[in-house]
Amino acid sequence: MTEQFSDDVLTQDAFLNGRVMARQPRHGYRAATDPVFLAASVPARAGQSVLELGCGAGVASLCLAARVGGLSLAGVELQPAYAALARRNAASNGTDMTVWDADLTAMPTQLRNQRFDHVIANPPYYAPHGPAAQDAGRDRALREETPLKDWMDVALRRVRDGGYVSFIHLSERLPELLAGFAARASVMALPLAARTKRPARRVIVQARKGGRAPFVLLPPLVIHQGDAHPGDGEHFTDPVRALMRDASALDLAAMAQA
Image 1 (tube, rainbow, N blue to C red):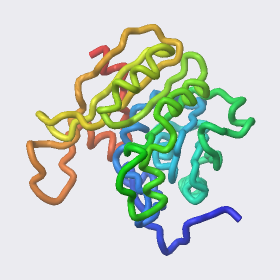
Image 2 (cartoon, rainbow, N blue to C red; image 1 turned 60 degrees about the horizontal axis):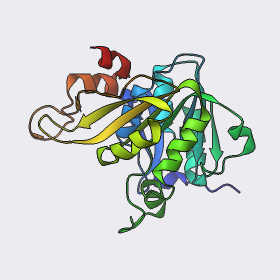
Image 3 (cartoon, one colour; image 1 turned 180 degrees about the horizontal axis):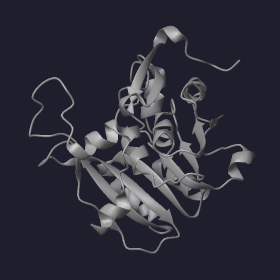
Image 4 (cartoon, one colour; image 1 turned 45 degrees about the horizontal axis):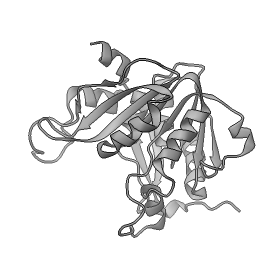
């Protein structure tokens, strides 16, 4: 029997101003803004296929589907309970998404024989060694068990020629991301800064397989208004509010041409 979360340990959370409603474990790994940023950055069109590596509860794919209709969605998730939750969330949002219980480095043959227009991922941020999170599922979701280079290699293998790979990760991993993608793709990177005059802590990296364009480092996207958080409320900048609430796109190609 497939491992699943019971309803009493789940919350129902709204994304994109309620366009996506997702069940998540109250004390396990919980999606926040990163999957929304990732989904906004994917230049997908109706009729295209998307594979999410390490899809968790499916929030990034569901946010993408809420913005772009008519996509063929697939996900790979190592933890069976989260894979089951992603299937449940997809069904309750009226989204057709096939989710595979699998290690991304040992995918089923059927999946290895497919190529996708887009591959997306929000890989684990934390080093393999260090203090463990109290919740085992959260710890496994956030701790890097599979090396980042393997995530990149799998993504490039699964995306078609001319297709796009989009990752969100810590900015300190940007050199490694560039080294893994640059030999086989053209690459753009968008730093995400919490506020003006603050270092960018996260980065979206988008690689087009087989591309030959030079690397582009885009101006940082500033997430919050002001120099400090004045109190309750989100205080997003206007561009970030548009993508967080109105499901607007984060068009990296257009930003590169501006």
